[in-house]
Length: 546
Image (cartoon, helix red, strand yellow):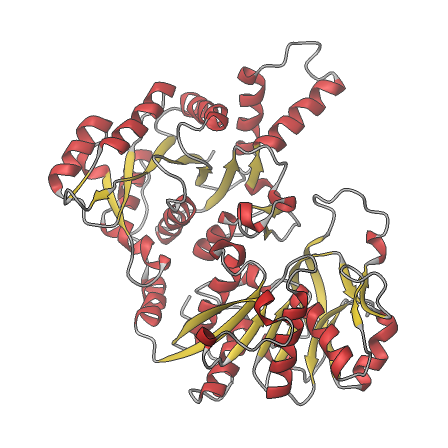
């Protein structure tokens, strides 16, 4: 039976619970333990699949096809442990399950209540990630202590602690210790009050992780220990790091968080082996070159909308000991013949990510045309691939007015069209082509060279595809369909013949990239951009040490 670590947050949101939870997972793996990670969200949406990126950030897709919270991306990148559809659920999903049981008569006519029925369902779904051989389950509770919608989740994890016994359940509370600049001092009162709310529910934290912009003095730590009922050695500091979020596991290890956890559970484990991790951080801290990559998106003002994209670009830089400077360009700025914004400067590569809808599409198409005609290394993902096909059809294959039926149903040349199996779909949530699907690679293509394989499996999230009726015309004009479904029916990767590096994928390779294992396509894209910048030969480099 696995042990449980519950991670809660207090004072304010956006403290970085997901990164902290993932960092704890990395430390436990470094100690030789086998883990599973889970994120529970108190909002009422069944999942984030239909939520706007402005509301929720990116939707992270698991290998088994679940649309989940972006924190699962942190879990996989930090730990290398795959997540599944069981690794994320919401209050909406909990109520959905309970109400379906009630309609079936599973409760034998009983009155359905928050306690025990909702809390029992939460506990069942948390425990569902347990499996043979798992030592520790880490469970992050979304939201902030004090939020009314989170009360049943906190009650559920309190009950798990009671049922499992305190030696098999541990509570980590991430809190904010603000620095009042005018007074020149930090304040512990918000953290005290946050912990007081937890203790009212019946949860007493075993460790306090304090986010702060400045160092927390010893007297403040003693005060937090005293008023929060946490041992002094378990009051830890998590200041903003200088270079990368991947430094956080090392910061927590230096304060013995992994030792605190092992002692709480009474576990024996070898010393932490973070050698590969610290070698990877060394590549980030001391890059040998810099490359500038423009990302043309419709949600450019929101960092979390393309979180996995940005991380995967940085992973590509790690593989080459290069710093990736990401230049965010709003797609709408490039419409109507507009040039790059002045702040973009000289770019060495261009990436167009996924998305939905017509807004900004013509700006993406214009950017791709410039990259293709000027020999600028280009990487398109999902809608970015569809825009690449539209641009190629219009300007290389002579198909004037070519477009996607998603945004232009009456286009004379629907080079992108709705997938056949999507024609009868009515509900929007969880109905796209999702999760892992196989892809056969064309020998001699850039994609095959990057992967070093004949076939791969990648994660998808889309409803539209390249229209096979136009495939012959596009290929005759120089578009290479270098990746296809095994039956040859679906185009998964396209390349532009004769271009230094022009690759676009219908799938989302960013979801499989990790700092210790950069995705081959991101690695080679950054290599090509470095060659453009005069800092490399464009060949793929070896990934960071595992």
